[in-house]
Image (spheres, rainbow, N blue to C red):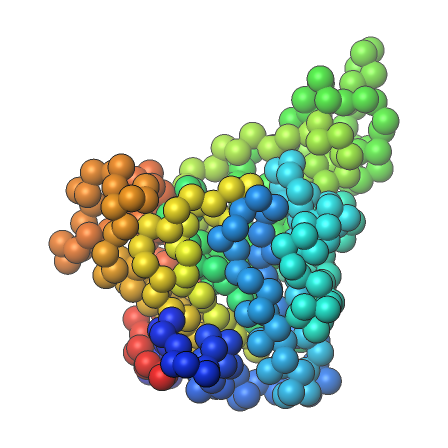
Length: 376
C-alpha cells in the first residue's frame, strides 16, 4: 500500500479567499471524493465543546465538510456520544443544548446533530475489536455504528491523560457510549455514592446481571462479584450517584482508545481531518480553555488516522512554544528519540502520547509514517 499520504494546508489566506475555501480544496485534494457517498449515511464525528471552552472548532468547519459530502450524494449528520463525567454533555438533552450554545445548529451547519448513544448514554452496540489486547469488544454509540461511513473532524490539542487529542481520541473515546468510556478509563467496576443515591431503583432496570442491591437505608449497592463492569448503571442514574473509579493508567487508556477507534472504523470507509489551531494544553471537555501553546499551524487531512495524528504531533513539536503559555511554566527537558523538544511531554510528563501511536500501529489501525503533501 505504500506510505500513507497526509495532506496539509497552512493558515495563510490571500485577500478574497477564506480558510473555509482552503479546507474544501484540501479535502478534495486528499481524495474524499474517492468514497462512494451516494445515498449513504455519513457520521461526521465532532466534539461540540463544553460550554465555557472557546478553543473548540467553529461550526463553520463542519459546514464545509457536510456540504462537500452532500455534494457527493451523501447524507451527513454531526454526532458525538455523551460524557461519563457530570457536566453539560452527559445526557442528550443538555448535550444538544451545549451544541446549540456553541453554534452547532442545523441553521449554521446545514445538517442535524445526533447524540449517538441516546438520551442517557445507554444506546450502544457491542462491536468487535479485531486484534484487541485490552478490549475484545467495544461499546460504541448506536448511531455511529449505524452509519455507512465515518468522517472525523478533530480539534488537535494537548490532553492531560493521553498527551494529545486528535483523530484517534475523537473517534475512540468520543464514540464510546458512557459504558464504553467507563471501560476505557477504568480497570475496575463502578461504585455507588450513597450521598447522591435517592433509592429510585432505575439503575436496577438497566443492570443485566442482577448486581444492584438495596440495603436497609434504601441506598443502592453494587455487588462487585456479580457486576460485569459494563457501566450501564452510570448512564441510567439521573442523580449521578454511580461513579467510575478512574483507575486505568495513562498507557492503558491510550491503548484502549486505539482499540475503540479500530472498532469504529473497521470495515467501513473513513476519512479524517485535523485542525491544528488554538492548540490548548487540555481537552475541549474542560469548561475553560488555556492559552494556545504553539502558534496556529494549519489543517491536515487523510485516510490513515494514525499517520494523520503523527503528522500533527511532529508539526506541533517542530513549532516554537509560546512562552506566555503553560509551556513557559514547564522545564524544557523532554526530548524525543532524536533529541528534539517534545512539547506534549513538557506539558504532561505522565501522559506519554507515544503509547497511543505505537498501539494503534500494533493492532493494524494505521502507521505512524507518512508522506506530507502541501496544498496551497
